[in-house]
Image 1 (cartoon, rainbow, N blue to C red):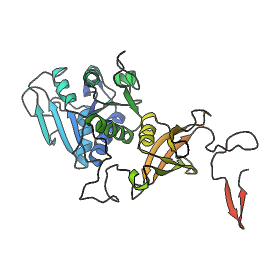
Image 2 (cartoon, one colour):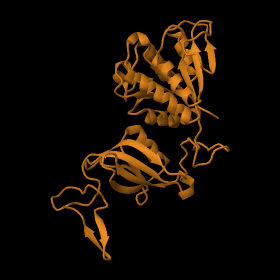
Image 3 (cartoon, helix red, strand yellow):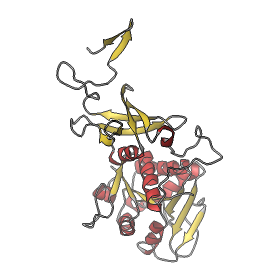
Image 4 (cartoon, helix red, strand yellow):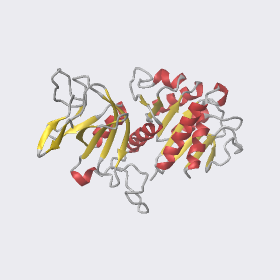
Length: 312
């Protein structure tokens, strides 16, 4: 079965820039790559970021479902696969049908319409992801609850890929799908676009190599389970599973030497992971002569059968 992921955001009358349009299109592409269904607000008179996401999804042959107002199907984006005519007005009733058709929504910038969509999702306990740094309504509420009931946060994401990964994770929970995403019979692990880590192959945990996004230096190696990966993507900080203490730990919460998650890479068999990070401070728990943490755990090399420290 497929999840229905909505992309919401500003309409063209808010004069958004090409940068936001590119983000919306990339969200659509990422949803299509994951073989999920994109749900968007189908306008009739002008473009929108929601419609831009449809364009991105269609570039990758994705399935798109447009929810429009009134009774006509003559929408701005002509190549939508499915059009739902709500017979209701734009600005509230249509938005309710749009959001309630989703298993999770992703918001970009936005005005009163996007705020309405967030509120509908909040009331219905539908997962919400917000693209950080896109301004307007989304930045006002990102990583916050919408009221004192604290039902569900608008979870912040820093990239389209992270947003879609979060939407899939939260959407599966919303639907009650606890099992990892299963790879389709037609696709091998080596070629699928489904994010399907094979935790069960290694007793519930997988090795993770941590690499500096800028220098490409290998900083450390650890282990992760499903919860650790989900938390890393959710909070944006590298999180691991301690095989000795049998608990989650987020790098740097005590020392301050955190690692900001920039991206995640998966190997061909989906049983080993790479975290691409921006480190703040040292990566290693061991200390140099000046009292600071070493920048990498791999500070020695083998020479003539002995280990030599390569630190300056």
